[in-house]
Amino acid sequence: MFSPAAKTVAESLGLKMGKANLEVFATTLQSMAELDRDILAVTSDSRGSGKLGPFAQALPDQIVEVGIAEQNLVGVAAGLASAGKKVFAVSPACFLSARALEQIKNDVAYSDNRVNLIGISAGVSYGALGTTHHSLHDVAALRAINNIDIVVPADNHETRAAITLAVDHDKPTFIRFGKAAVYDLYPANAGFDFGKAAVLRDGTDVAFIGTGETVIHCLLAAEHLKQTKGLSCRVISMHTIKPFDVQTVLEAGRECRAVVTAEEHFIFGGLGEACAGALMQAGVMAKLKIVGIPDEYTVTGAQADIYRHYGLSMEGLSTAATALLK
Amino acid sequence: MPYTDRQLQLKSIGYRKKILKYITGAGAGHTGGSLSCTDILTVLYNRVLNVSTQTFKSPDRDRYIQSKGHSAEALFVVLADKGFYDEKELETLCHYQSHWVGHPTRHVPGVEHNTGGLGHGLSIGVGTAIAGKKDNKAFRVFVLLGDGELAEGSNWEAAMAASNYKLDNLIAIVDHNTLQISGRTRDVMSNEPLDEKFKAFGWDVAIIDGHDYPLLTETLGTCRTTGKPLAVIANTVKGRGVSFMEDVAKWHHGVPSEKEYAQAMAELDAAFTAAAEAEKNERVEAGAL
Image 1 (cartoon, rainbow over the protein chains, first blue to last red):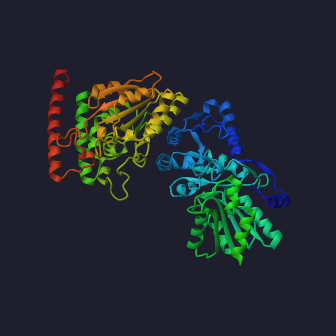
Image 2: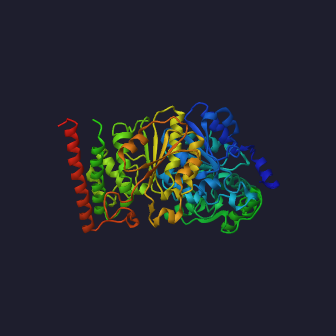
Image 3: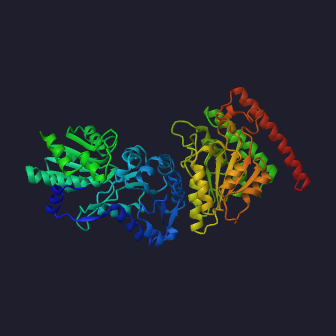
């Protein structure tokens, strides 16, 4: 995932590699479920992919398996939630967000059944498996649905906090993350709240606004540009795409010379366009570059290859930023 | 006092008149399917479900999920009769900012789930029934399906799960009127034999006349411990109760003209008068008068 140069920068920042967000999700959910028998995991033959094997062993009465049937997964989850259960429907983001989209729209969001939809192996986590297994549309699709919050945690802290908050959240949620180990970005006891972006580093030359697993690359690019060009870069983790923290985006647009957004998603309808919409509607004409997956047949390869190919890397984001400053 | 079968018949005729009244007033609605499922709703809400304005928030209430959401008008009329809201609200059916839109929503008191997209209700019913089992609750879950709706594959995902989880607290009622918007269901996409399909998916099956109050009562009113979900294939007539609407596909969402409305009301009024007379005679025979 990281070039030797990027690893060196990460070391210089004292960053430590954490676990996969997927693993943190599973252990967080299990620890809460052990204390609350109303917490249920619903899976579509996805307990293994969701690292829920130990959960199923420890709490067999709190896992509901529906087989490979994502529409039924979401409908059953809605029914369980309507009867008072605290439901986490867990399935690969690509299937969950596309095959069951109408169930998400009608039975979860429109009917206001408080289901937490957990999109595992999101983005290009299954990069080498091809486009069938990519979810690069999910944020755009769900942004266009009323009454569901969208959360894309960047690291273990954000994942743990998001899952913990989701249990009793007053709206359905879609929380999507990958399966690769990620760097820890936060100190212990850091805060977190849905809808409030985290400013990980302040600066005034470039604002990098990332979401999910791209945030670390933003942070490395910021440090790289400081070390090589003396630039002062702001780094924002926009972990919640809906509701959207417009204020933090506007401050970035007003106070920095350029804004670079980074997302593991098509460039349409995701973080970048949300930032562009916020900035333009407030009359903030910032220089802006949306870095994500372009409208083309997505290149094949591992997640790291695809990130590198499309510039979702320290090097790629640094280049995008310096191009804007010219 | 529980209702007699004759009194249910009177209620049903009254419901049908109101369904036609409000659909005609709105200039829109699903006439044929509302009339085919009327008797099913009459029996459910007047004899079977432990649902009332007092119990609607109770975790122990039975659940009614109308998966064939387009027959909303039948449900709206019944819920008004059960006191969930003033019937005058139905004068706003499909109007600007009315909660009484063309499919059920939770903004309407008494509605469990927002439905309208087909092939959704049975999965929701499965989830609700699983929750009931987990909590050792006695409530039952009833899902009303259209026969045309069964072409949606999600129904069969849910059917598989229902038997897998031995949900004998789940009852799927198929409003088997054999018509859908384009014509005969068997011509559009045959789903027959329906009973064998449900049996193959591990369900108990009952085939009944969906306009027969004693049969509906016995079939829907009996709590079961067979370890299997129950599919009730209720043979019904689309447009039931109005001669020129019966078994005609165009009345799927046909709205009566002024003349047609008058004719339909005359037929239903005559049926009501005859049934009221019969009801009176039955009370005399029973020594109540």
